[in-house]
Length: 244
Image (cartoon, rainbow, N blue to C red; front, side, top):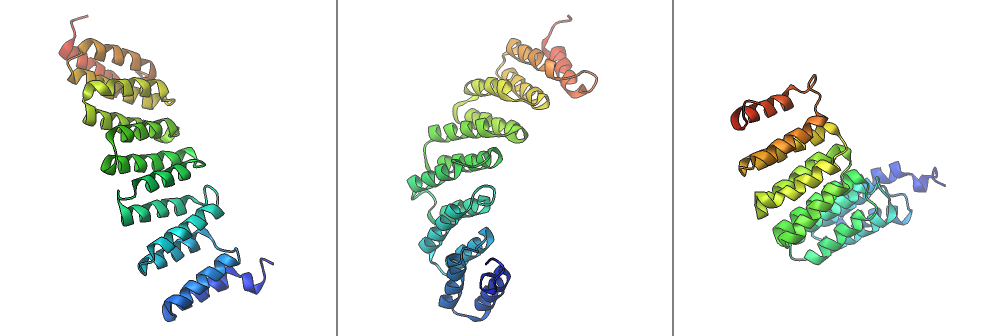
């Protein structure tokens, strides 16, 4: 049945293009809906249909189509549908329907893989920063750091620490850095986090704490391969240490 002419996705694609070029709103909508009824729609076709409805100011109808789409597909195929849905919803409502936005993010996160979950959570946190409560935003940034895979973990933890430092001050960020150093699985990321943590303590005038952090991070830095780490520690001791 999938090779029958009436279910030929290529032919339906040509037909939709023809209707969008020469047809009416009603005929284009009918063509898209026919593809959905035949159960041959791809995520890209649904995205195109949603964009068509948005261009014609049928915003709620577009959101209903996104809902149909995310119910039809699974990760990773549903990825672009979720990101498109959330982006379109934010563009339309901003923070005026915050609870609905939160619910959409939580729905998307239920089955999202780690890489996409971290990206979704950062966007979610930015929404909370702009329209919600700072405390909720920090909690979502923490979720993003915990959910990130090894490739994205360092960036997620650094972002979380920077947000906490900006919102509550450098002393409050200490706990974030401590957790980050323990949580990071890649040695290169752990030593970079130690350098950032030591810089924070140095800025607060806590020389002994900074020295202890540098000593801890040294276990991740091979002196034969990482001149930068050891030179940073040496410069620190020249400025703050004694002769020994």
